[in-house]
Length: 370
Image (tube, rainbow, N blue to C red; front, side, top):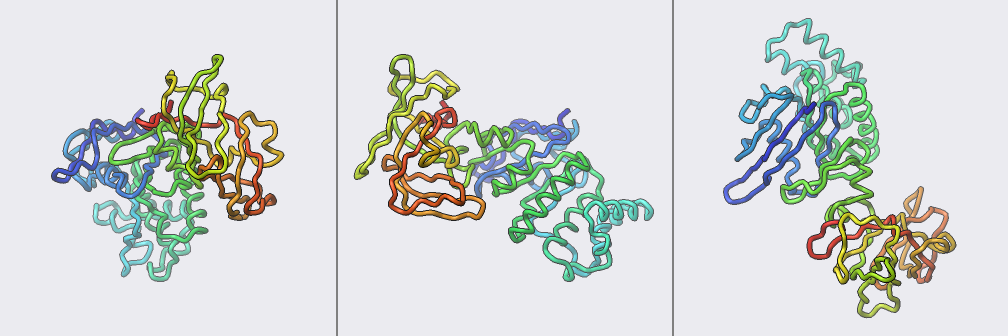
């Protein structure tokens, strides 16, 4: 059953199209993440669902009810913003209960809901404090609690962790995942942080220019990107890309990279026998071959891999549990993820290899996966 159903949603500000005939079906109890760069329309879409923006065209259904023109308070949603937006003169308890008191709920019901939210979020000892006496993480818990007490089916989160430091973001990310597992409510979460998206989501909708580029599971988004934009946006460091053409020899498709001016080496042809094409390629088709840094092996680890190359090391970037080697293959800037104990010296020329089944091939003109 659909919890949120968006049909042909279009939003324009004057002549500027912000969202373009967007369709999205979110299942009941699903954790969906809207991900994309700044200006892609993800927060705008969330505000349309919340009723904070009037759409130009299309329809929005929540739990089967057409709420396209309903007021935010009548949509059955709870929203958590990037800023905590707490009332500084009120205690945590009064911040949590304010909306319920304004709505005229019975006192006993308000007390019960506040106690339940405080217990779920582990903020019971903080109920008598004011926001000024709370840490950033505690304030964000209170902001989440204010949405929880509404007892609704759909929760909307607009970059709720972006104001927190790195460790606190990690801790609260885990707590949000536990919260979703415990409540089972539909959650729609906006972020520009791909780590948050990959760890929290049941599905991710990657947006660019007001259009959903790919809607898939975190695994599908990462390992089977449907276009060049998704492939380059997801992953840190980004996927490595090599430009060239396709040819067919003895029944096998071969990728031959363009030579790079001034490069001392060339990329060896890559046999794509183990690559699963999405559509039938054409001989001579111009494409980009993409391979993620962790799928390229160096040194002895590369010996048994089918695609053999040479990697010139420029510098190393230790990351703690692993490391990144920055360099080039065939003159193309490339990165390789390594074990932290293996740090080749700058200037070293190492054997490199990868399996084409791990690669992605994109049409150079359309950017779509081949």
